[in-house]
Length: 424
Image (cartoon, rainbow, N blue to C red):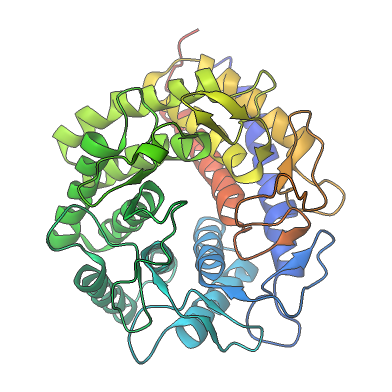
């Protein structure tokens, strides 16, 4: 361990520099509306605002989470002001005062645009509000969070079968024509991963018995139904959580590697010993599986495989790279095996060399296998949801890369302080 401390300190400083002077500074400089109280829905690669772009609930919730965490960790007034602004935007512009919940998007004039209530987006609001409470606790906010959790349980929980329903109309009627799934399947891994993430954050602050029960149910759901025997995540499911045929061949490496540490974090927050004993080896298994088939020789993570681990889509998108370095750090903490530190360094080197936009700030959305960024939207290979020619958009956020830097900064500090000794 002592031999690694200088390396850890050096990388910790690099992560601090990236967080403060490239990621968060970019969002403060280019994300805040000059003539409004919110955030731009999109900017081009140089940070110029796309004034008519819609504003996304997911993006605003992720901004709130990121800056609340940064304000909490570093006591920075500028970060605190952005967090407060993001909270007001969610409360004043995205909240549906008539039917409850939050609109998926609003237009550039802050009027409701997409009024479908996706459970995925509602979960991100709960996740962000819980983090905001950690930064700025108040009885009123805690009560609001508890009421919102109960509201989601009433509206989104499937009362007859496993899991949560995916989408609803504005007035909370079940909506099966606009689910966040490739073939409009009834259940998605991604929605449930982020409900689990949100419920873990909520339980961390309130220790409510029903939140505890639902978080345990979600972790069991992942252990028994969503994580495949080989360690990859299933993607889409029917109502009974049987994976659909069209989904079985897909491996989403970014979600796999993100879940490998998010699930472990949730298990630790829950504190259930039986779940912890099951989740620890599963987290390591998931990480090792992705490392074997999804991580390139240069440390970059491929997007996905479409045929059982073969037919790999070799483009490397920004958010899976961020999740990769956190997951390798988590692997080091769980096993004390130094190989994960070496893998982390390789993946960070790829990020630093190819993903970070050192000239204009923030990270490129997508690069090809050789590390060359896509600066236009290719007709034959468009990115899912987000655009290559925008630096900020409804899905391109400071949450993955900002969170990754904060996770690494704190985890390195904890490891050095605890004098945990990785194996050689």
